[in-house]
Length: 303
Image: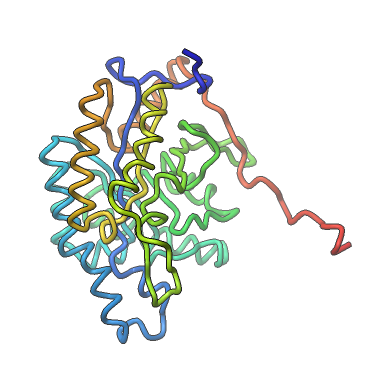
């Protein structure tokens, strides 16, 4: 077989691939981000986002419990404080809560100091709820800034899951050579592209059937399984937690388990494993320095 991944990491117990069905539990944080001045007036849209907290997350946790798998949820700090009972359910289920901003802010719209304040406030909310400092981060809306990596390193984070520079985990480094594990993201694993349809924000994607959406996710999983890679979801409870879609998730997990040799793990567990391989000299990941440029490239039309 022609292996299309160079230098894949070895997974525990001879598994062929690692899988994390990660969710971004945003609830109404997106509503307040999109409509900061009149969010309370948008009751219908708010109810759609609240569905994620009230119905979908408990449903998703029920699915995880049925299959006895522990997974990761990225949660804005505001949502951690807004829904303490749901957060307790996640914690009691043994799942990881990772950082996803304070109010789902696009941090590359802000200064270094404001981005730092957002990061610290989200960290504080998670630490108060879980009793531990988060080690993982996924930047809301992929709005990773030139300051984000340094802020993560300064505050003890072990991994990020915002960038798309490889099919498998790799390392991102700052200008001083300090490193962080990157657990990559791609739109093909994001349910937003499959299900998101909101008149309020003029986001009018055709809504795919669960079977169509799962086929997209399954294709990436099958390739990861064949070539020794890694697959992670970028799913949202208020989207994928709807009944027909949740039912399709059950069938998808059954399929993955039937394949065998799949390591279901939290992103924290995956990171710990990878750090161990690196420390023992058993794996040398690709490295990518961030940010890529110190300043905008001068274009001919602007010179």
